[in-house]
Length: 66
Image (cartoon, rainbow, N blue to C red; front, side, top):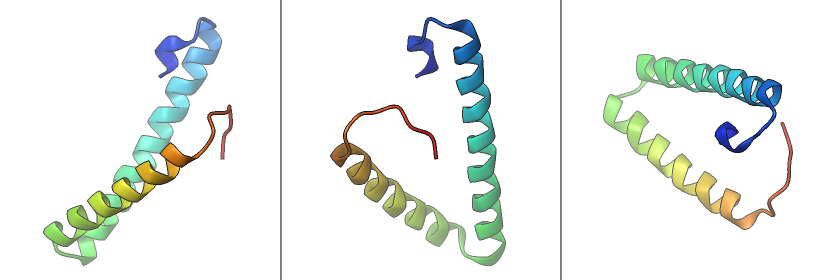
């Protein structure tokens, strides 16, 4: 999404932020795989992704960070 921005500094910021968040997600998946069956982990991830998509689709579009 950062490709849509014209400000180079802001593009860089969002790209770094995205990379950082992606690493967090990978860490959590690796941890789950240490304790649970691979099929269970990926099934649950799919469920969570579907629910998150529903939530995101229901929210108004606005600039925000958590």
